[in-house]
Amino acid sequence: MQTELNNNIGHQRRIMRERGICVVIPTYNNASTICDVVSRTRLQCDDVIVVCDGSTDGTAELLRSMDGITLVENARNGGKGEALKLGFRKAISMGFAYAVTLDADGQHFPEDIPVLLSANIKHPGKLIVGQRRGLDKADRSLGSKFANSFSNFWFSVQTGVMLKDTQTGYRLYPLRKLHGLSLLTSRYEAELELLVFSSWHGVDIISEEVSVYYPPREERVSHFRPVADFTRISVLNTILCVLAIVYALPLKMFRVLLAFLRTMYSLIAYLMFCFVVLLPTALVLRATGTRREKASAILHSLLNSVAKLIVLRHGIPGVRYTVENDGEDFNRPAVIICNHQSHLDLMVMLSQTSKLVILTNDWVWNSPFFGMVIRNAEYYPVSMGIDAILPKLQSLVKRGYSIVVYPEGTRSKDCSIGRFYKGAFHIARTLRLDILPMIEYGMGHVLPKKGKYLRKGHMLLSVRKRVSFEEYDKIGTTKEITSWFRRYYINEYSRMCNRMDQWR
Image (cartoon, rainbow, N blue to C red; front, side, top):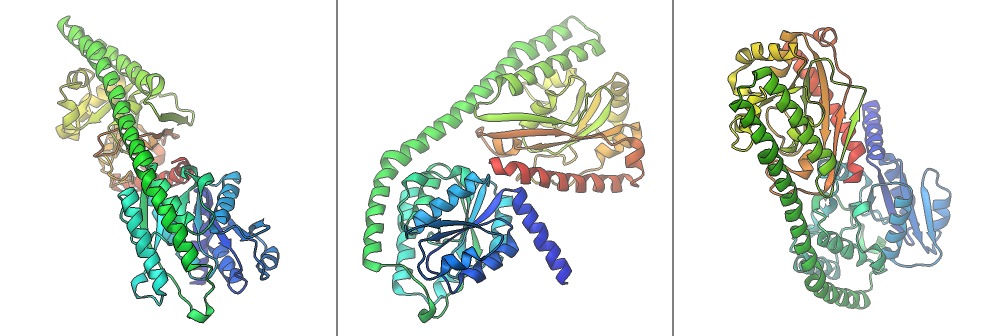
């Protein structure tokens, strides 16, 4: 049991490092709790940054004696906001993409770090707030209860976002999306500012429940000054409300306008290529009675050229596109499989080579924009049935074409790897073809399944080494081959996300 627990924790620490996640702990005069908090945090994460903010009770000496941490010391007490700034800047300089923050007084449980990690995996690039569980029943002072309600109310006014716990210090920040860091006030209200600035700049905020421990009142260490701090918070909220009107609202309208222009720019370019190049060519080939095989080859070449122009050269404003190719030249026919995230998938796939035939859905086959091109290029809808399609595919394979199948059958809603269907693997076994895996990342973020506008982002297509018929045939039945490849995709896509989510 202990060995399994250790393996799980070791796996978690590896994932956190792969995703570029560290922990930042600001501390001021927490000598009685700091060693326990840091030690328990080190069990959860290998990369711990502790900011000692001018402590005078021996906290600094205790931290200097601890191994395995990065210690940042402030000569004098600058406040929690100042300590967070120092910690974030240190984390950024060390190359981290995310930082978990937790308090040093023992109220936060380092054992809840996996909760924030799971949320980060599910929601990369978003700010995760650790909402304290059972906060309404905890033994807190009236001042603490009022402060949280007060903060929640003004946060909703300033951002239009409802959160139940805006004062929690247990969070996971996307470091590359921290806005207004240089403008933060020095005291603990800086945590509210970080939420407000992030929301204004389009960073989604997700709440996840975490545990909280309130020690007996006589054992608590508090640096809250009711009169002075409430005055500071009131002044800050007044300023933020003004900025919400004169800065945040115009900024939001500008972001919406950019998203609209980005989408229209790409859509117009796409339609122009369809109506000016592809459709006229298809009509001319049909009208002149060009032999089917020759017409198909011409259309494939055009589709490849147009896709390259749109994806590689023309591009989508604000979107970076890269290909990782493990030596594949597409000279030998194969069954190409790929995870399915977005309408952009087809364009990305077509940009790789002209020797592709894609099995499509009915809406693509019947599309008024490019249905004629698809049909004349000898693409076929899956609804025809595998047995009816196989003789046609065999003829195309003899002409050097590879067959593209998306085993999931439909686009994933959340970009996760869905259920694989057996069709692709039945085709591969029947035609004794290699299977060429491709893995894509980011297409579902740039244009989600139900999205209407193109977002900024990074699209990556990873072309892997092909698996020969002899290799995958040893796995067993078609069902077992299907399951094996799905497990392969789940593992490889997870590794890809750990690497790429750092740039979200």
